[in-house]
Image (tube, rainbow, N blue to C red; front, side, top):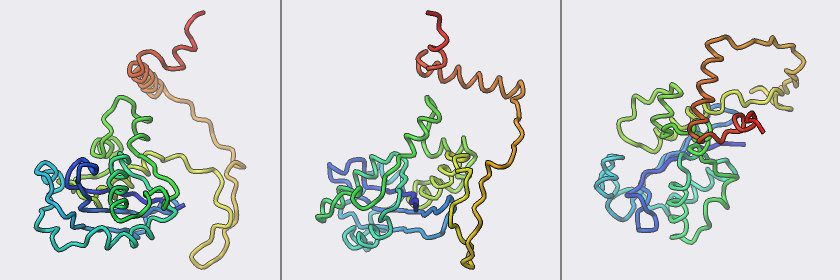
Length: 236
């Protein structure tokens, strides 16, 4: 399945209160590889951005005056997103804005176009409970270079999110190569079951065991002593 990493910039924080999308950035991933088939739009929202929003994205009202309305680019956008998994950091925010734009032109919500919407913020919270999980924080934690990010920009943020996601999900690949995978020349690759190989068992060293125990204690504190491995060992 195609995966599309999507980000928006907006005039403010509430689509229901009249704020609108001013920028959309999309980055495509297929088989965990960036394809370069990306989409980027600047949009005329028909209203000015709030001052606080402009401090975040740095896009002036004057710059947007000659840009197309959402209705002009909607078919191109939906064709691009169709049947893909859409991955968004803090998905409810961006989805609420996309749905409002679609509603205003008589279109169905975005869920009717795409295969699924995945919230990478929720993924990060499950992996790093009690930690800061903003995109910048994840870039620092996962060693993704975000040195070029002085202001928020939809396409740059989508590119960073793709890198973050690949790091978040590293190690989740199947041990079985895809059946019917082909080379660029059209030759069918043989199916190789990697389970036939005997892999060495490497035991954790003292430093790794200590780091693991530290992580368990940290998670236990965040859950206020309700973790399964602690309660399961309690007497009685």
